[in-house]
Image (cartoon, rainbow, N blue to C red; front, side):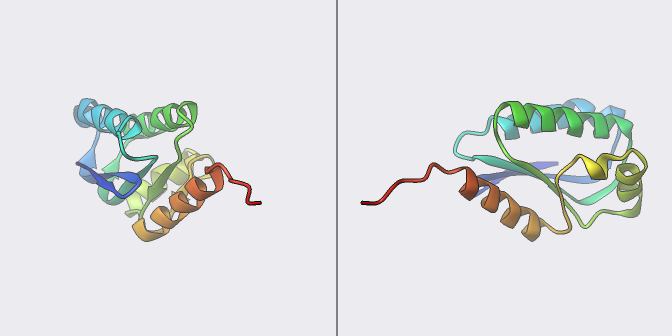
Length: 124
């Protein structure tokens, strides 16, 4: 797992398998991303995640709620491995989580959201 700023976006990259044993580290990374100074949005990069269970899904849903409360955009990016895609589909999470097919698409989507939220200045 890795947390790295990419301009205005905090990127959390999850790798391999994550289940109950990795929950504490994931919770900490998600919290740090939500409160990361110098960034305004979060991308959860799941492209290298090969397995996830309901524990991780619950953490992702909680971090989404935390981001909404902080008025901080959040997007999950793939491409998603089959077990991860299946978890998202079977639980209906694909209908409530903001997903992007690739990291690049996720970054673009977040920049669009950040630009739309930026206060507009009126010109004379």
